[in-house]
Length: 158
Image 1 (cartoon, rainbow, N blue to C red):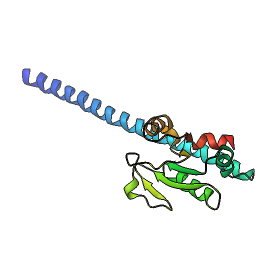
Image 2: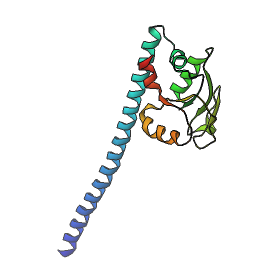
Image 3: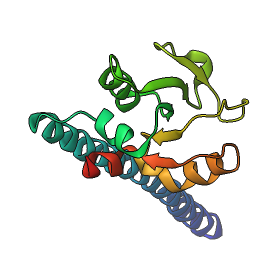
Image 4: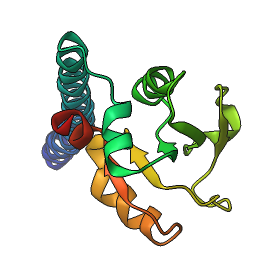
């Protein structure tokens, strides 16, 4: 009888521990999925604003001209960073380099460096990774002395 009770209790405790472990893994998966979803929604909304700007016949180079930024760097060399480089081709604005965490594995029309490398002086750094702007701005402001601007802000000011 005692062995039977111990067996049942062991099975119940094992089930509870197993359910807890599954719940923890599932919760972490849900959190990561929501975070990625939120990030991509923000990226979509920013790119949608960019389309609206283009439909109005505007070019982002006008923002840089107006503010006297002739030499810039771009932080975040994914879709938005690549698109910004293309947007500024054949304008008076020179993209001197890109900054990215994965600098060693990115190939672009400009030099790509890590935030920990020596950052050449520029007139401004444009951050395309808008979801993490505050964190990135904090790190960049310790490394370079120029305005650090969110691409999203530029898109709404053009």
